[in-house]
Structures are given as C-alpha cells and as structure tokens.
Amino acid sequence: MIKRAEGLIVFFLFSCTFLLAQDYKTIDSLKLRLNLFATDTTQIRVNIQLSKQYEKFHTDSMLIYADQALKAAQKLGNEEWIARANNNLGFLFFQSGNFNRAFVYYHEVLKHYEAIQDEELLIPSYFNIALIFDKLNNNDKSQEYGFKAIKIAEKLIKENNAYASTLPIGRLYNNIGITFHNQKNYETALEYYNKAISVSEKTNNEVALPFVYNNIGNVYKEKQEYDIALSFYLKSLELRQKLDDWQGIALTYTYIADCYSLRNEYAKALSYYNQAYDISSENKFLELQRNTSEVLVELNAKSGDYKKAYEMHEVYKELTDSLNIMEGSRTALMLEMQYTFDKMQKEMEMLKQRRLFRNLTIMGVLVSLLIVITLLYLLANSKLRRTQLHRQTLSLEKEKLENELEFKNKELTTNVMYLLKKNELINSISQKLLTIKWKLKKDEDQRDVQEVINELLGSVDNDVWSEFELRFKDVHEDFYKKLQERYPELTPNERKLCAFMRLNMSTKEISNITFQSIHSITIARSRLRKKLNIVNTEVSLYDFLSTIE
View 1 (cartoon, one colour):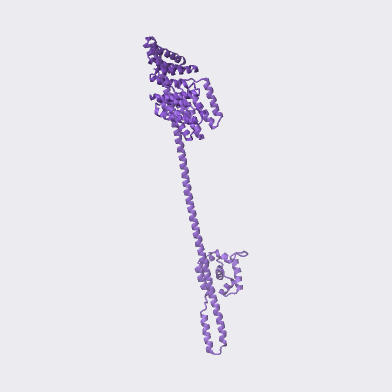
View 2: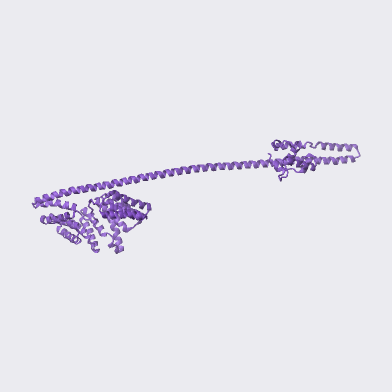
C-alpha cells in the first residue's frame, strides 16, 4: 500500500542529468552577460541564474555562483538583493535535501522581510520555512509558520480581493491540512483541505485541485470510509487525465488500488496497480514504479500468479538497487555540497580573519603613530611653553635689571648733582660773606665772619669725582674693564667723559663736575667720537656706550 499526502510543491526525484547542448548555450550566454554587463544588480541576477543552471550537474559551480551573488549583494549593501541571494541559496539546499542549511538562508530572508514589513513577501518566506519543518517532520513548527502565512494572506485578500488570484492561499491551506493529517487530526485536516478546494475552484486552479482531492481521499481512506475516498480519487483522476499529468494519474491509480485492496477487492486493486506500474515504467517514474512493483508482488501472490509475483519481485529488487544507488548519489551530492559550502565558509572566515588582522595591524600602527605624534607634540609644546616661560622670565629679569640700573643711574646722577649744587651754594655764600667781611669796621666782626666762611669752605666736597667714580663702578662694574679692552688708547679724562656720557649727562652738567668750560667739554666729546669710530654717524655717544656692558 502506498501512503502519502500530496503537497502543492513539486517533488523532485534525483536523477543523473547529462549536460545538453542547450545547457551549454544557456550557461555561455549567462557568462557573456556576466562579463558584458558590469552593473551590480545584473551581476547578482546573472550569478543567481548561473547557480540554478549548474544545480543540474555541478554542485561546486552552483555554490560558487550562488555565493558570488550573495557577496555582490552584500558589497552593494542592497538588502533586497541580499534577501534574494539568500533565498536562492535556501532553494538550492532545499532541493538537495539539506533542509537544516536551507533553513539558515530562508530564515535570513524572513528576517529581512519582517524588518521592512513587506507582507506580500512575508507569505512565501513563512511558507518556505513551514515546508522545511514539514520535511523535518516537525508538524508543530510547520503549523506555526503556515498559520503566520495564512493570517497575512487572509488579511490582504480581505483588504483587496484581487489578491485572491495572486497569493498562494490554496497552497497554504493544503499544506496546513497536511500537517494536521500527519497528526491524525482528520477533522481539522479536512477543514483546511476544503478551504483549499474552495479557493482553487474560485480561481479555476485545475492544477491544484487534484492534489487536494487526493489528500481528502487519503483522509477518508484512513478513516475506512472507502466510498467517499474513491469519489475524491476519481475527481482527481478526471482532472489529471484532462491535464495529461501522467505521474499524477499513476499516483492516483495507486490510491484507488489501495482502497480496493483494503476492501479485499483484489482483482480491481490488481488492475489499477498494473495500470500505475505500466505508466511508471513507460515514463521512468522509478520510485513510483518501485513502490507499485512491491505491492504487485503481494497481490499476484494472493491471486496465485507466482510467476508474475516473482517477476515483480525481481523488478522491485532491481529498482530498489537503482534507487539506492541514486539515493547514495543524492547523499553524496548533499555531502559534497555540505563539504563545498563548509570549505567556502572556512575560506571566507580565514579571509575575514586575515582582513581583520590586517585592519587591526593597520589600526595598531596608526594608533601607535598617533600616540607617538601626540607625545612628540605634547613634548614640543611643553618645551615651547618652558622656552616661552624662560624667555618671559629673562625678559622680566632684564626689565627689572634695566629698571634697577636706570634707577641707580638716576640716583647716581642726582647725588652728584646734589654735591655740585651744594658746593656751588657754599662757594656763593662764602663769596658774599667775604664781601661783607671787608665792609665791617671792627676786626672782631671780620674774624667772626671769617670763621663762618672757613666753616662753610670746610664743608665743601672737594673730591666729587672720586665719590662719583666710586658710585659709578658700583652700578656699572664691568664698564671700565670692557671699555679698556676695546679702546685701550683712551686717556683717563676720556674714560671719565665716557662715564658721564653713559649716564646721559649734558655738557653743562659735565662742566660743573669737572670744572672745565663747556667749549672744552664739546671739543673733548668730538675727539672721543673719533677714537670710538662713530664720526659722521647718527649714533649718539649715550647709545653707543650703552652697548659696551
């Protein structure tokens, strides 16, 4: 007995497909487009198409082009194309039977469409994951995602009935029905199967109806309501004959045969199984041929036709061996795809690690350079601040010294002038007293005046120059030494004149100190300029002598 629920997805049998001339042409054409059209989206689209072409015969190339599509989409940063590339990889792994790997990619697609809330594309995303869980015999999860898809589809159709003809609502109802059917929850399964029929009839979907009719027939067959089951099988058979769906016709014959066999009507069962076998044999439906031959062994034995039973047994063994080889090839293909994919993933991870290491190295070098540059800048800035501070300190100290020097110079000049004025005053008073003295009659009075004159003259500072020179050397201690080193030919009087000029004293002031005439001082200044080599220049004696210290 053959038992299976029919989904609305195509059941792909693995077969060794040889590369045909048409395949070459298609692939060459796609490769040419890949080289000629360099736009990012074209590259992604063509890589996806190439991966599907290579799916037939070359898994390495299939995965390479599929992965190239994903990388190109990621490089472009286009989330929509990333989702399409992931969907393509999910499809390829689903077709190869690697459902766990397919789930990874389909889930990435789902995350994208959930993020942007694209309800139309969420429906197939939920549906694909529901199919994966169905393949993994996880009915609860399959129902969870199936209901999510149905909820959105029903909402969109309610908002706009035009969606009824575009959304796969019938497929969704049918596959939800299958999950409940697998759980032996027949009433709920029938509820969703009937919803699928209602939608398919409204949209005149004659391709979908035979699948659902057979699924309903299988429910009633398992409930042992064979007449009802047969009525649905016959509806399915009628549509499939109309569509020339030979594989569907053969499969429906097996369902009808099962019903008759369960009713112990072996002759009718044998007739339908023979028809299913003949169609399967003629069209190379190997798995269906193998399954029907297995049942025919039992039925022919029951009818006493042991020769036919033996022949069917030999056919069954041969087909089983062939299918086992194919299944082995399919398993090998899955392992090859897994190995190729894992290898590519490891290479990508290694490349990613190398890039990360390179980037970290570059960042480390840049950070180190930045630290060094920052330290050098801080050191230079600190040194500059110290230098500026030192200069400011020196400038302040220099200014302080200059102020002190100027003060001492003024003090020195003031002191000398005070002595000169004092001497002048004493001499003037003495002269007046002397005049008065000679006018006095009495000798006693003349003596008294003379005593006063003597006292006044006794207070005169006769050594004003010595006092001046002593104080000058105290203020300008290196002046005479440097003056003597540079101009050894200067006379003592000329050195004295240099000292007076260093204090910026006028000719008259110098005359009062030295008791020389102004004319003599003027001539002495001219001779001094000549000896100092500043004749015919605008440099003053004061400015020149100020540079000697």
